[in-house]
Length: 346
Image (cartoon, rainbow, N blue to C red):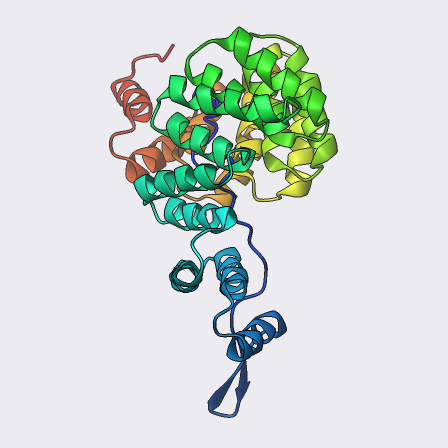
């Protein structure tokens, strides 16, 4: 039986370089007969009008660059930052914006240079320090990353993000004790630090520490509709053998995301392996397949259920479906070989 595993790799990229999205686009289209009228959003129109009146105002270009950046129009954002920097290159915050643009366009070396320039202009800029720490973490230069984190903590000893970043470094260095300690300090400074609670849950779950449950619950209190937190909580209960709590967590996940195939799959695993309720397991696998008709593992698991129920016809259909979707799916190939040769499967 193949079980969806709950191991999480927290993305090293974009811990602090978060691109905020809005539902607004830079242009709104309204169709009239066969023509398309383009309406400029009010915020952008105001910035455009202000720049027409003040074409040498660097801050206006900076504001419009941030507007475009928030809407993922990085080309326009960079064009405006170039204009801003040509007028005034002495503002530390301009280099922060530049570093964000470089970062999301995979120009990490330029992002690093911009952050270093920012710190030269403002040696107390903890945001730039932590973004540099992230860049070093991203390339696995943990010593340098921690040095920048400690620089930030000397300026702001209560900085929750700094402790979170330190925890991520220790996690990557496989120092779980220090990672947990740093994450705990992060949530002490900011009791609504969702990502830190998730990381604490992951770290404790890996140690089979029941504290993981409470950390995931804390994350859910902050983000009640987090599919990540509900899934992790369910898998944590599942690994602990707390079947009813696991099923309840997966059901709550499905209330948030009705098309979450993993919730159905893992619930099926519990019904099959732990509770020996084959009909219920088959129903869960069937729902997972309904969401993803190419979900090989669900076909295989359902086939095993049918096989246990001595329904060889349906079992064979599912194993054949596995190999049709993925000709290299060895477990299904082995079972089919046994069934066709008359050898009893164990």
